[in-house]
Length: 155
Image 1: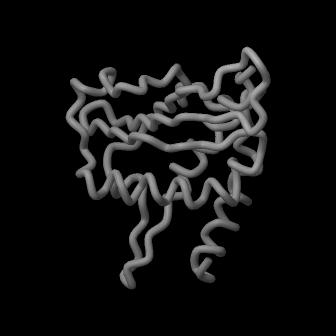
Image 2: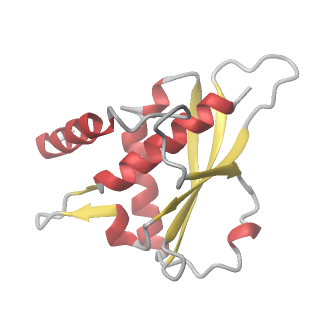
């Protein structure tokens, strides 16, 4: 990881210390719901992200996940990211795989995080003049809260 990336990650982690999880102090604005593997729930929404922007944002989320949220009992597959300029929200759909699935337990879960106050690529991704890209700290914080809520409710 580049030094700039490590500094950004460290700052994001320090900023997230107080972001909380599913308990007290968590933001009621971040919505967690069952995910739709077909994508039909987002079919009527015009995505403010181009396919290339969606690919970049999903890769950045996946890259940071390995150093943060994804070190627990689950593997995450980030499948879709749909943003609405008019609603000022972005919805991230993910597939979650338990590390050790027990008999009778689902092999994966589909969940979505709907985050308010985000409306497009520039609200999700910071792009430096040298071309380096990273998640905006506010979006990172919103995803951290969402993933904590999801993990706290998977059985």
